[in-house]
Image (cartoon, rainbow, N blue to C red; front, side):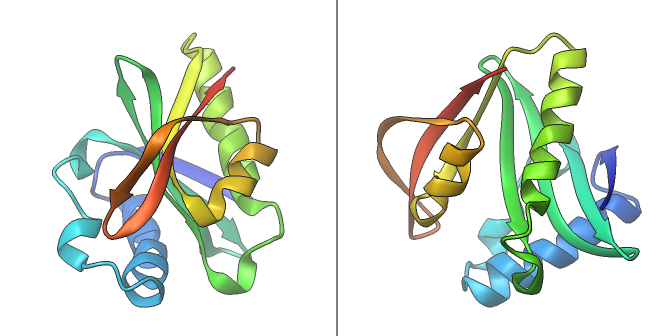
Length: 142
């Protein structure tokens, strides 16, 4: 898989990531399109994984006081369970380490917790609801 990243909400990487997010979050999970995009779109770095030049998996990150916040992690249905999102996380961690960031965190949909646990994250805190879906905060020291 080829991984590309770019900062900001313009350009091919962002557009390709939005195609994946639309397919997964809006069409598959029925999340309101008004909730899926937010005021942080222009403040994030986007990662997109390509298989045969087709965008199939994505994530975005934003730097916070707590470290690197990972959001909007998703993979097209036909490409799941192949380790592609794990490869995206490896790229995110490599970039964070290069900036001497020691802490990655996210709010994981509860049904996806096993994936994050397998990638070294730990559940912290109580369940919260986002877009009508139960989530837990998860953290990883790198």
